[in-house]
Length: 234
Ligand SMILES: [Mn+2]
Image 1 (spheres, rainbow, N blue to C red):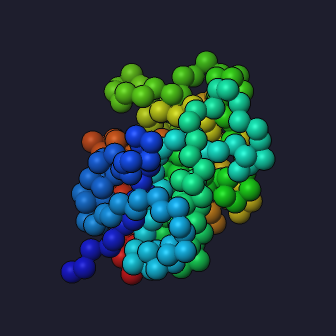
Image 2: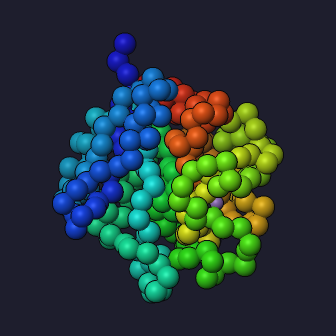
């Protein structure tokens, strides 16, 4: 049987000489019965429709900060490195996947770029712009680097995970959704109020601020990828 092909967009590194992504994304897709293909950021976006037509689904993964000019703000000193052509490539992939009716799973920066694409804004740096005692930007995974998220009970994400209260998540982000984009529902927040999940009405776009692909020891996060790959299989 043909396996659903999931496109995963790359991040650039080494002054744009390397386009790559963490192996945990394809690993989670493979484990869920899908096939994965990495999409290098082509500055020429004219071929994106053909590229997306070859995919069954799109995974928009983690990466660099989103260019603040794209949501109408000047870049603050506390904002990290940004790569505008990478942002624009991701946005083009998303727009085309939506147009062609392909399911999208957006993780971390993926949720942020989704929000910006559809008119939302971001906190450029949580510690600077948001009153909280929670450290959201713990890079290493581990039992101590978790917080909880409360999901909307009737959200697609809660249904897929089979849980909504005090859901365990890892946390390696210093930016987050500020004003929510139109057409989306905020479906999860950390205890300090930071937005951690959003989705569109029919659930064809599921976004989360944490990294479920790095928590595949938990059944609910394996189920998340199985659900995504299955929805791409049509
Ligand atoms: Mn967090």
